[in-house]
Length: 368
Length: 215
Image 1 (tube, rainbow over the protein chains, first blue to last red):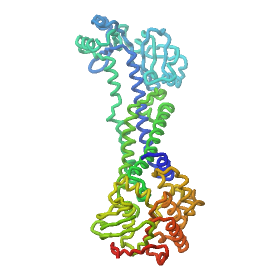
Image 2: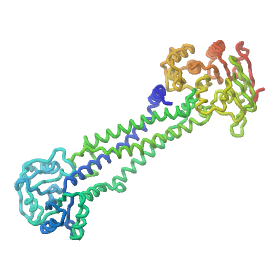
Image 3: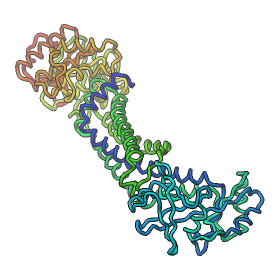
Image 4: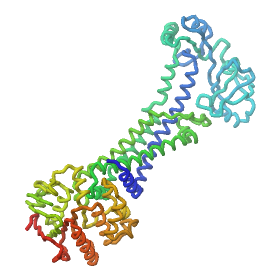
């Protein structure tokens, strides 16, 4: 039976034995911190990418040759528009400009609403241009021709992964910089008034143009979901580190039922504590340690990722080019719950089972 | 009050107690005598329901305590038994008052603080109530153990070699405490081979145990 006195007594024992719990607290915190940080980063990136895709039209059409994406001709735009169920088709200019001095790529996006001599840049682009003294303008060099474009403004300070290395240019200028002709687009976006017809229209376009890649927004979101391959690379290393740490912790927990702890349990049993009382004490103590360190580690991971911008891990995940982006604060509650279940529960079992075993042994033998 | 019938306790092939039959009346002071390993401590732990007999029965106030499931044997121990161990068996890292309070934690009595203060006063350890047990002398630890044993007004006091870790003066002080318990009407069972308990007026019976048998 759990009562106030039992709780207070458990706390007294916990505080008196705190040195033996400090190791558990820090190892547990380390594991949860690592896992939570990785999840915060991946969830944030996924969220940004998914949001960007959701803002697009329902179907995107790419051209390909030899397995590589190539530009798509305007004539296809007119033909696609004839398919029943499609209300509009837009040609999009989207590609990469290589800035040789910084040895980095800028993401170029065409937009009809911007004048030819102006551009809007992402925070990451701004940082790079500043390093090369391009404060107010930038010179694009394409086929020995120079395009001087003034910087109109910068995209949101809280730049996310999508906008950080992006330059929004007038569509015509973007076409010239990306060496596309006037009747060439990077891809087409198709607007469909009735969502239930999307799959049918994807199929219709695909049948008509077997060489084109036709993807619905939901297809693209599914691809984003698989962006972080959980069984490979960095994830695998991080999970193995966390797993090994966790097993070290469990081993420590199990072996922590040492002679002192055994005697303590026996003494309590001798003055009338039942097996349930002993398990309650151990549960209270280790629940406080594990849940306390879990909350501590999740808060620490939140600060590390969303306030300090995940130094080291950000470079591992996004590379040096993305050093200026901020992660959109996203908390994947369901995954945090899974981490809780798969860490706190085994942790508690690893102490409660040996304690129960000790509590059921002969009191006299245990006290020797 | 305590009726022991055909009691046997085996540890593997070793027979620690053989066919013990004993009847202890209320308010008796019993001294169990015998050399080390004769089975005295085993008998005490069986009476306190800290271990189960291999065969036979122990009845306390007409309740077969040897057959009680854990939850009830704990309750029996908590309410009826005050056990004083040779090595005191205190929680060394806790204070004196926390140690004495331990039996009260799982008790359903109401006036817990009052009982705690009374027990500390009776055992003359109130002045050390906030002291960590590991800092106490042997005599002080003994008084702390006594206070813990009587905090719930147990009607059976069991002491296993209570003076083995004490000097003569502390041993005499302990005998004074035991005499007081006797006056209070408690049933007391002490196992010892200390001669200081010989020829005590208050002792009801001396029982010798040899090789697990009453002789």
